[in-house]
Structures are given as structure tokens and as C-alpha cells.
Image 1 (cartoon, helix red, strand yellow):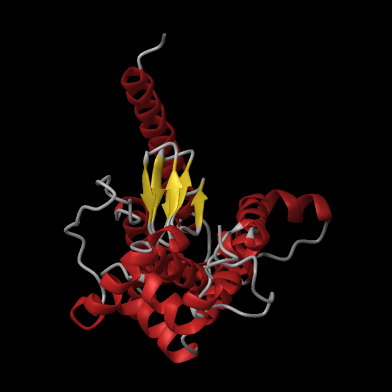
Image 2 (tube, rainbow, N blue to C red):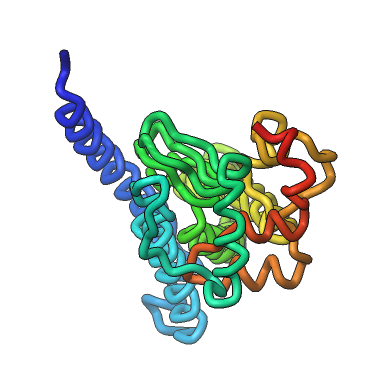
Length: 291
């Protein structure tokens, strides 16, 4: 029989190797297009190399740097792995507004079977909105999705960094697109035009296809943030025990647009979603229907 822990170690090593490749490739892609613009006649070259507009150039470099910093924050900030514990044990997790919710949370412990699911992989109870990630081999709080471009999960602790990364990268892509578009040179024949603009054409290919993906993801995750829902809950709603019995347009975790955005962008603590669920969905009346 294969040692379970040896398999886990081999999986972790493989995951680390893939993660390094993915992150190096991302960095090369993000840096490659701007660097190529420094070697041809472009607005970026005039700003940074010829110092004709240093403020413009410094602004661009700051946006570029911020995009990379947010990307690595999204990669390396722990997404909210659920700590393994005994069923009746207490944990040391810092919760949002824990002082005002302790009494309600203690009351809900009586009905634990109705709100907690058991993870057979981790052999522990999952807090509400958590899901086991087969890639990370762990349960993740407020699981959104496993992102292959980050090579990690997007969960309660790093979702805001992922969204900020998308927002800043949208600005960077649009700015770079304008610089690239304005750098094309007119030639008398198509052959000469293609030859003199080949680098710009490659850059435009990367920007257009990369930009479509990033802008699409940014819009989608902005919608999720406003609605207070996750990708997993939206896609798999019919299979999630605490959601499938409600109408499709009802979200028990929606606390209003402003509060959803505020919590999403400002909170560094995990939240007791069972308490929010109790307030909005009245578990006590529905627990007979929830497995």
C-alpha cells in the first residue's frame, strides 16, 4: 500500500514546481510587452529612455509594479485553509465581529448537523461556504475557485487581492494597448508595413487576447463581490446543501451592495457565515430540508 504522506509530499513538490513555472511565465509576459516597446519608437520609449515625459513613464512603471505585487499577493496570501480540529473543539481563528456573534454562534452549535458538512478527505467538519480543493488537498473558507494562473485557490483571505490584481491589470493592459496602437508606422506596401511593425503585432496579439480574459474576469468578479456570492456557489448552487432549497435569485449571504463591497475589500478576518445564514434564511425552520 502506498504511503499516504509520501504521496502528499510528492504532490506538494509537483505543485510547487508548476507554481514556479506559471508565475515566472506570468512575470515574463507582463514585463515582456513593455520591454519590447522600449526598443522601438514608442511613447513609452520617449517617456522612459529619452526622458521627454518622466511623469508619464513613472506612472506607467508604478501601475506595472502594482500589478505584479498584487499578483504575488494573490498567489502567496493564504486563501483561508480550514484548520483541522476535533468536532467539538475550539479554534484560534480570528473572526469578523466575533465579540458580537459569540452567543449566536454558541446557539448554532446545537444545530451543527444542519449547517456543517463533513469532508471525507480532511476528515473534519467544514464551516459553511467551505469546499475541499482537490488541487490544494485542503478545505478552503468561502471557496471561490482554484485558479491555474495563480496555481492556488481563491478564497476568503485572498479574493480581494485577486480582484485588485484584475482591476489594476485592466488599467495596465488598456494603457499598454494605447501606447502600442499609437506606435504603428505607416508604410507604402503591406510587406514593408508588416516587417516594420512585426513586434507591435505580436504585442497587440498578447494584449487583445489577454485583455479579453482579464476584463471578462474583472467584470464577473465585480458582480460576485456586489452580490456577495462566489463562483462555486453560482455554478454549483443546485448541488450545495445550504442553497439548493432556495429560489435561484435568493442569496442568504447578501447583506446589501455597500456592506458586501466593504467586507470584501476591507476585512482581514474570516467570518462566521453560519450566523449570517441564520439571520437571512432562518435555518431553524428549514433544517428538516437540509441534509
